[in-house]
Image (cartoon, rainbow, N blue to C red; front, side):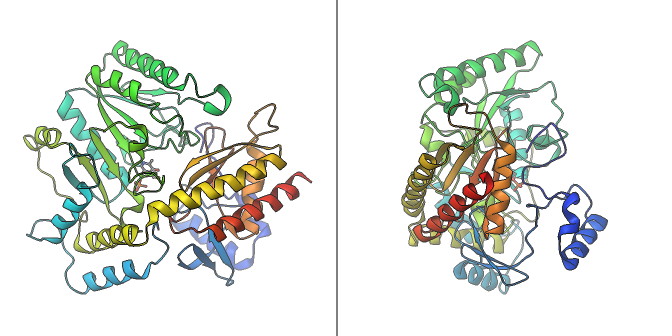
Length: 444
Ligand SMILES: Cc1ncc(COP(=O)(O)O)c(C=O)c1O
């Protein structure tokens, strides 16, 4: 995504309408009429998805597409155990959190056990945006500040407050209490100085907030810096910057909407890769395998400051059906050993992609953790100049070869591979093979 224009990375363009089938054109025209232009489609030839199972999406023509993009169905599309849990609960009771119930407590206790002990309170929401909005509201009360420090190309949501900290979306307007800092570009600048460079960027950001008259209330970092181009190494590079922000009174809010629930392959939470315990954590997308559930996790003392001022009720947040789905997700992550699967399949896929890099000069970098992988497309390995047009052609060529991925990063030149966590080596082989073909075709 970019803040330079209204174009989203890998978005369908109306200029390509004529190339589509009559049925697809009708659907798109109906979308434009009732949903309008803010709604974007992926790919030059959009996917008309009609059903899905595990890592496969089936389109209206019966084509089977390999899903290497979607992290919401983290345990696989339509996992039978999640479907069963939803159906059974929907037929039993589905209401809000103002009645006594043990299921939400069982789930909350179980989920909190996966966090460092200091994080012992959880509040439920319906989306990552809402959970982040709540985290910011609480942080303001707990610290008495309103200054927010975010990364240069961050995305944190769609509410008024979270859109104001999402510079990667077109139309972003910077307000005086929000300061952006650059994430180290390890591919171009090396890893040796990354920790110090990030610390200095955060120091400058904090100074800027002070100059503008804003006391900091939080630094907000996505555990994998997805929209900043997937910045993952060196491990621990955020620690000194966070220490500095805390010394100025800010809380550290970890956005786990992207890396959370084991995707990085080494631990349940992305922040654990960097060895720093956050003050608050925001959970979303994969938590319910597609059910609208999200959460904000925090220290009890932080929530207490909020409770003195306010009560909290969110009609659809933490309903029985959502909790049933979320509980089933935790069961499956454990029983199918999915964190280990992310690690082994992720490492295997990165190795294959690095072999591909040896043969294709336009693959500048392959980086990732577990099943969150970025392939940076450049003009040449020597120049390291971003090649967004070629990256876009590759993503569309893969789509034509029935493999779904997308683009990420400030220059929109990083191919984002983020499949369901059930992705296997055979699926990785399909992806690598078809990317190899696409590379040959797009350069030929
Ligand atoms: C890092 C991050 N934070 C927050 C959000 C917002 O989540 P939601 O779309 O559920 O509101 C997203 C969604 O893409 C995200 O990627």
